[in-house]
Image (cartoon, rainbow over the protein chains, first blue to last red):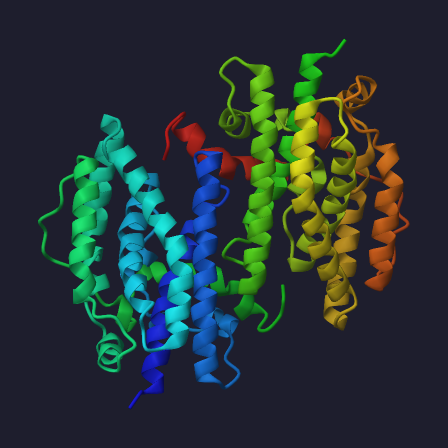
Length: 252
Length: 252
């Protein structure tokens, strides 16, 4: 039997991932070091807000009770958010932003490829639509990772620091939360072990081209998917939700 | 005889207008009260950054001396910026942002309609390209202005406050700066008096539909086009130029 609450949680997890990394990327909007790339990262941010809307709309429809995409985005608390820790980390410098984008886009790429075949038609349709954008995100971020990794001495050093900073947050993407395990058994969720090898192989190949070495560290952070977040998410939500909470329902 | 410096100044004025209002709109990115409108205002911001790039690229080409779109956007000082004061004002609330957008988009619409016929082919081409976006900006912002003006008691009050706040900044758009006067006499610039009537008529008609009354105040602010800016522009540039100035030429 499908458990509706689990499908809602699964959908919210996907929505929250997109909303939070979209918000992080949007912090570059108007602050990028180069106008052309400022536009690129801002467009990617908008792709994510679009993905988030699709998932939130579906979650709201499942939930009923006057839930809306906006109430789900703006009126839930930190412990209700189910995004991976990776996407809530501060942007760091441009290299760190690029590397996070590459790690996460590659994950999304293989994930949405599978989700297209979900038994849940709505999730399948959203995944299919998002996949085109995500394919571009992977290409864009991997090209940048190679350009910076195999660039100047300084850009290489910064990329190595970014790898150190981010690597331990990559494991959580493949670590099943309770609602993911149930989603798999109910036939609409993705078996994360089935995409881990593809992710590893893509990262390895881009790292080789970028002359970066893969970390050997085994310890991985986790908790975000189950609502245990870093202090960073509180600040993100504080900023993002301020207007809606200060004037509930108002359009200011 | 065409004076090249005047054409550069004229082009920079158009670029600065677009960059600064684009940056202001991008401050809503990830902070809007409604996901759908967050995306709309962010897309408009990206349209402006695109316009700014086109004008800066042309100005850089005219200027030579290793000038680039990025050096013109990120390495000039407050007194070098030639944008109208209207676009540098803080966003205020959603109603004020909408009203500024409506005032400025309507101005751009009639301006670019004329600029399409400029003797300068580059300016004409940029105007023609931008006009499609600007047409949408006018429609979007006028629909919102009507919705808010003719909305609830609170939304109407806020729109009236926004009118008070912004009206005295609308005159500068039609007040010729020195480089505009010369641009007209040299055949590539727009006679601002020729578009003032169209602007007035459009504002009047939307205000009527929005049940807002037109201010009668005659005093108008000015100075921005000639580099005399409010303190607000300093903060905008401080935020926007920080990265490029902290790491000149670096891509972080």
